[in-house]
Image 1 (cartoon, rainbow, N blue to C red):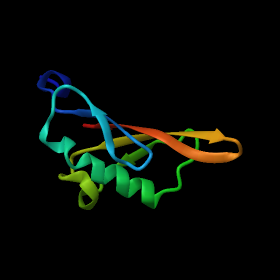
Image 2 (cartoon, helix red, strand yellow):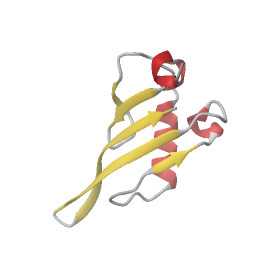
Image 3 (cartoon, helix red, strand yellow):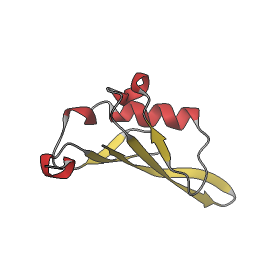
Image 4 (tube, rainbow, N blue to C red):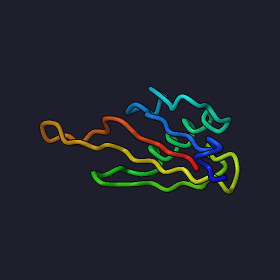
Length: 92
């Protein structure tokens, strides 16, 4: 049985401040701290267009060493300013 069959993964959409906007209908336990991982990585890394962040940092919303968090910020340019519009996040 793989992770998708066991629903042992999380998918969520976060706002530009790293706050949770929406998540997948199933709610595994590690979804609650995924917001901490997103907010930590957004503060630690200057996101550029096309960036993907792979996080495995248990002290910033990672919970366990074997969890991988893929953070995909949608960075857009508006009138010469660069801004994060939303952040798509998956945890496996």
